[in-house]
Length: 187
Image (cartoon, rainbow, N blue to C red; front, side, top):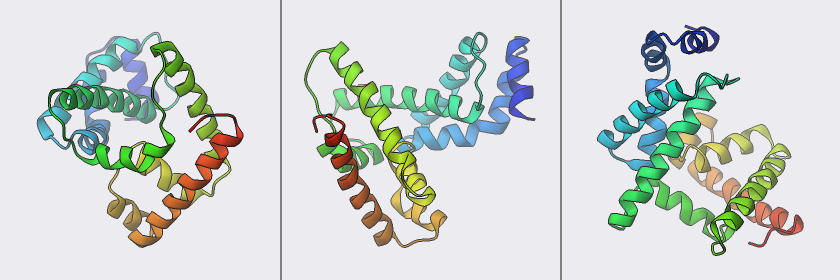
């Protein structure tokens, strides 16, 4: 079933919208949650919560790309579970590794509102930076730092060695830091 047909089911408030969403996007959403949580039960719960959030959001929203819409919901839910779990006990999976790679670019401090404004500014700047990169570099960066995919998996999918992928990401982080500084974002 196409995204347009699934979205139409949501707008009709047909419960088959969730069934069709699960048939098409369950694996995709589960993979996003697993990459962050490294726990099947928590990932399954995030996926189920994703369907509930989509049901609540559509309508009034009409996403242009259902996969991105569902992926964002799943990622945000998984990050929330991860933060809650991390507060209870230190540890984690793939997300700790990814965040440590980006640690030098992430600043902390300030009020919640200030952090939200700074986060929006950083997101816009990163989007501008990524738009200037090659397709392969952009896909590598997004899969590593948005989807939190394992480096080995990304390298295979993109037809490169792990060391080449690491090298590209290292240079991209270095160039991103320069880009952020040039745009007046303190890193």
